[in-house]
Length: 195
Image 1: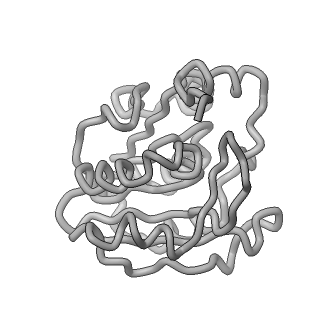
Image 2 (image 1 turned 90 degrees about the horizontal axis):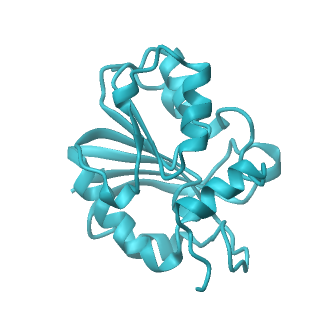
């Protein structure tokens, strides 16, 4: 791939408002998943958070040990303008693969599909590293091929299992029943527990 998906690339996309993945609110699968969690003390990471609607929803729902990460400062600054009481030291402007920490839960929303396909096993390895024992990775992956040479990059359940099955107990990896209308029949919900 000749396209460099670095900080400059993503910042340019935000500055040009070329953010077709941004639906302007928390998506139904993530909202419903978060609504089922009683323990609001979990340490949670949302990598590739973008405008962080999932983080906003979680924060407003009582999750206080919540961290967001993005390679571009633009969406992080947008988020902090709206949520000035969000802890600044829980906002990480860095490359995901450089991030250090341990989390009980990592939320996946349009991040995996934004990475070059060559990094997918590295993603799975890094997620495993960032999670506490019995920690979980949960969220949404695309269940279709886009044929793109730029994000988003899709895939299938069969492919995704090859990255995760050695590192995680796959509790859920199935078609979403509650996708937003534009993504109907195009998403997989995952819930993976660190081995």
